[in-house]
Image (tube, rainbow, N blue to C red; front, top):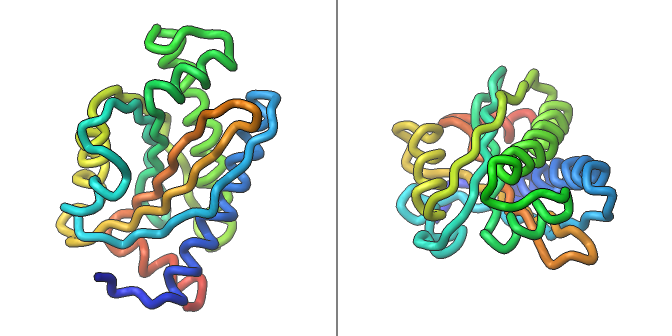
Length: 194
């Protein structure tokens, strides 16, 4: 159930698409490989359902989160499965799970997330700045629930814009979530005129 129209969800999906495109270009430059993006999905879900929509809540995952400060506070969360983290670290010549591996994933999150936030700010005409990244390895459900609880506050729904960035030639991907603070969805839709 959603309180947003198909037109509004299409507009949010297009935002995610353009933001992901900019982020994929940044990741491509960092890795020296071409990067493709999947068609983003836009979910507006009750908090309790949001975690389960992303994947198995009990699966292992590494999350890199960047806060968004400025006119529309929120968070961007990048999620890596253990296999994807290992492949991504391998591309950068470091061992996943090591101190260097975590640093590498944080740097990927920093470059990709900041590019996404900057593109989003330009599209909706808002001053948005990323905060330094933080990383955690835990169960997927615990990571996502932590971000949603911090950001959605007393809101009864969460907006998840989910995109996959796929590194060409390597079977690995990065899942991408944008979680605005309560009221952020309405702010974006107002700026988009829908």
